[in-house]
Every structure is written in structure tokens, then in C-alpha cells.
Image (cartoon, rainbow, N blue to C red; front, top):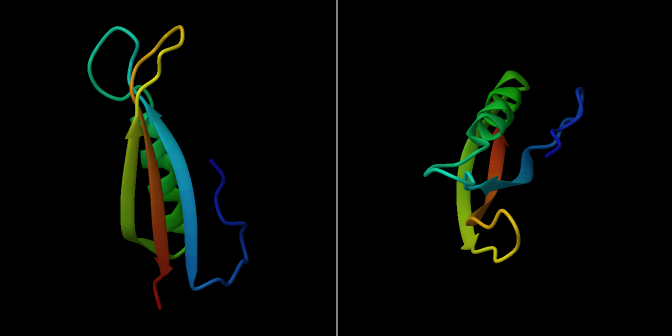
Length: 77
């Protein structure tokens, strides 16, 4: 996950992150990553405008569901 560089003057920013289910328990294993992205963009003067998710399962070692979150941030004026 990357964030918008400092000094960038875009009106909207679109970012994606993948939330992974914990291997041995319920819930996401990386919600703090999502929280960090939200707080980072807020500190840069953006607010969350829209978020969409798409889910998929994983059949490999470690398995678990994955949720891809696409977030649209809008510059606060």
C-alpha cells in the first residue's frame, strides 16, 4: 500500500489494499494497515469518499479469505 506523496495537489486519490484473514482465528490480520492508510490520508488533507470491497478465497498454504478494498479519498477544501 502506498500513499500520496507530500505536496501532491490531486483532488481525488484512489488506493487499494488487501485485507487477509488471520490463519487460525476469525477477523482480519492487517486492519492496522488499513487504519494507517486512513489516518495518513486524513493528515494529508483527504477524507474517505468511497470504499468498495471484493472478496476471494485462497486455497494455498495459509489459506484464508482475502478482501480487496478500493478507497477513494477526496481533498478537503
